[in-house]
Image (cartoon, rainbow, N blue to C red; front, side, top):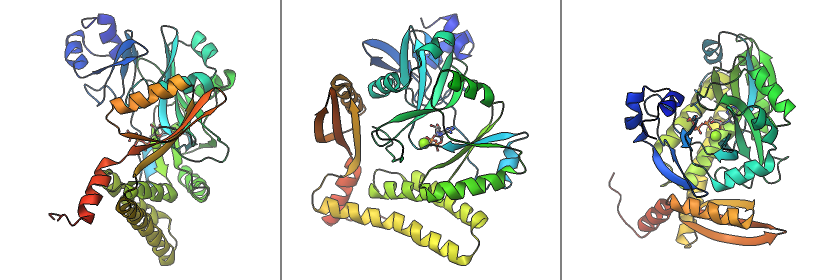
Length: 373
Ligand code: ATP
Ligand code: MG
């Protein structure tokens, strides 16, 4: 298979480069079948690209971010663009290969929970029957989520919303109208839409949308050119703070390269959007609280010998839960089960991904270990 010209063609690399490219892929197993995925971008191929039964599923590209709406937005788009809500969950790509509908995470893992949830929540059979060469890209959101839980008032457990339809092998996105039409035709839920704008008027529109989203503690927006080729993201202050709160609740597990950009985003947002010194002062106070208070709480929890980490709840068929927990453990994550119940034929489990670095470091420093800085 490694000298397979069809595979080289699907990946868009010269046949002679195929072998060295394939060496970069990690081998995994899902439902008894071997597959491979690319954990880091290589040879111009996106991170998260997977190969299952000879079929290629392209990784989802990284979306650039602007720190200022004006001139960031008009500078990035030369024609009309759509503004959509950036939902806060995790990226899933859904494809059908050899008749099986599969759910891939951002880094290209076939996750048992994601695949089962995709099969349960989306009726995508008819879509793939007629469009086998396409994949759905969406966000899996809601409080019952093994990766990025977030409360949405209208989502009780989990929900998938489509934001892109792409060619599975090349990763090329369909145009926005074509994507929306397909989602309507096949009854697939889509991300909320805030309308279409010219580049010159878009910054003002985003400003007003962002103010509302910020009040609702929502994440932000993704803008996209109507032909689907360009995207740009911009996020709310509420999200920067929530991210920092999360990072500083596990200060030795989240690196400095996670924390620094979020403070910088907030600084540029203040420069562009604040109307007064008072507003900036308020922003600074809230930012400071989101950094220090969670860290204090966690250190106290370690002092009381409590488990520290990220808590998640998932609900699925018992076999799927079992498979998910082993999938996570196989990735080196230590899990502590907090609650384990049956509701009808489903198993509902609350577990903590133990933050070992935070636990161990906080304990050592509390016991007086010296820090070399
Ligand atoms: P990267 O920087 O590599 O893109 P990331 O996970 O840090 O990774 P995010 O800041 O979360 O990226 O922003 C991009 C992600 O936003 C997409 O991968 C997608 O999962 C998610 N997303 C949520 N809503 C949308 C939307 N409406 N359009 C596009 N992407 C969306
Ligand atoms: Mg995200």
